[in-house]
Length: 346
Image (spheres, rainbow, N blue to C red):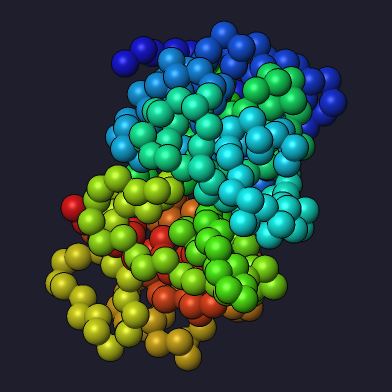
């Protein structure tokens, strides 16, 4: 694997932002990969139409080639560049992209030959979305090509929501990290597939995320995909059975009464809101307790803090991280899905 001096360029002042965007565009045009902020998590981007550049994403992340990537477009008008829209879903698709793009919704569509098979893991569908992050939008507009951009971390590990988290994962593996601060949502985009149906379309949620079933139900009958239980090729990113995992073993403890601490083991707790009445705070002498939504139990706040807290607990060097369950509705569906994957060891 190639070794680089990884630059981290800030964007908190207009001249610095222009410099960072110009450098990112230059590297992308040269076939390199760069880490960019989106409204969900930081992505590791390359020209989606350049198979050699996309291969560098897989190399830097140590990502298996059977795990497909999301293709980011500059605008909804570019769908026809990379995908064939079936006429039977075109009206529903148009309504949905008008409502949710730019934003954290990814849609699976039949791919066009211009998209390299490496991007889609040889599958006939391509995952597309339009990011709302202004830095990302400036870069993709400057490049003039779609960007393939999975999360900017080593494969299977915790997704990064800050430039420092990207640096911890990929320092020396890529040329550039564009630092635009913390991500707005903190969870990867919702991935859906639209299927014809009567009298309503079917909206299949392939990966839960910030766009919730409640948000989608106006456009058809929402169906939740069953959770992947084996590690194999999947139609969309982030669907392998073991994923988003810290190095420290993690256990999702759905009932506090099931916890029996082992003598000599050090434990840390990922708490939803840090309330004693939830039954977790007094289970043992925790090495550390970190809360997702301190005192409030607000799912959007918990989502923003989710990967940050998981990464911080992973650095403690404890024997095991215990995670409280969250309310399994709205954005809680996505966080529980990620906790289940993070707790599965293969």
